[in-house]
Image (cartoon, rainbow, N blue to C red; front, side):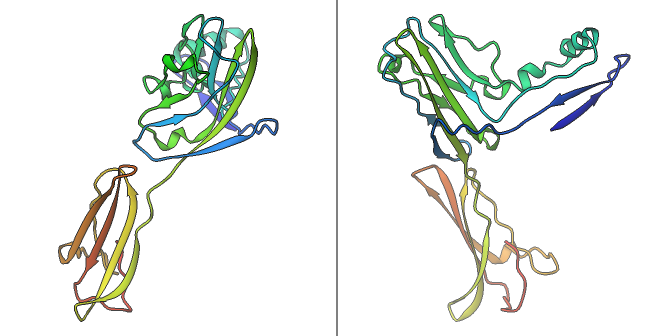
Length: 238
């Protein structure tokens, strides 16, 4: 629970309570989907009763957000939402469709311009959501809900955003000399490699660096070798 005390100018201070919690539903199984930062990912959703866009209502929401707002009186309530649009910031809504068109007025600002549904696939029962430029804040459980005259349904998917791997330093023997090696993967910009010894002296000029792109997901893997008078009992940081 996050408690925010706000006092803006002559505006009286009041308490806004925002509760964020994870909702668990045992009735609907949750599929897991792994994504990487800065890539695009499709959250799958398919219902056999969906045939076209006529009389179709569906939405995508985040299940880990619940908004609760408490103010002392209507006057403070009006003043707060006049200056602080928390409905926009903490909205559960990711995407909504009804009346044969997108309805994004209450969309969470985190997803503005980053989500879409292919209308050409709706006639095949697909309501899958394309999420562009994934970031770590996108990690959550998402619920896809649909209603038509022919039925209604709900499906859930848990998006997991994978972090880069922490660099690991190992000692090795190369060309008859002791060296320290460092390898790490899962980077989504070309990484820079810095070597430091126990005294935090920069030894990077005495290292070689090989950066390889992993073509399957667009991430980079880095491999570096430090040759500067490496001591096997020394401490080195990559």
